[in-house]
Image (cartoon, rainbow, N blue to C red; front, side):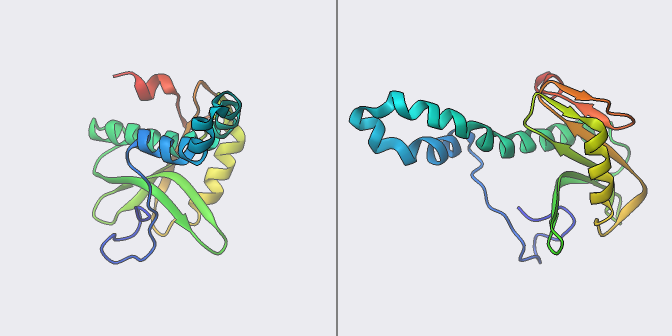
Length: 171
């Protein structure tokens, strides 16, 4: 995957991830302990794996958030002419935005979003961070809308689009 603002045919900036969530779970969390599990230490390994689960789920949650935004865009819910929804990152100083929606031939950013694998998030703080991060986008519309995602609740989302697991996983 390349930053959504770059041409994937020309950029050298790429991230690779396993698309199959089951395989990613197995290789990332279970496989490192496979020998110990087979030797009978399964019960003592389970709590270690459980403590690693939040780190593992963050990236998958962000992708579910982007998939949801793509569905909303396809239905016209993000405005007209949405041509891409993806992740954005840049170096020096480092910045990462979990989801950016681009629109039109100019591919201007019209929406920036942050997804947190937490039950509840502080919308005020995340809005402030997102506004700061959007300043680093190479092309942005005069008004960039914000989206904030949490598993159960976004407290005080203000004018940001608040998204939870209920919206993501309800058809």
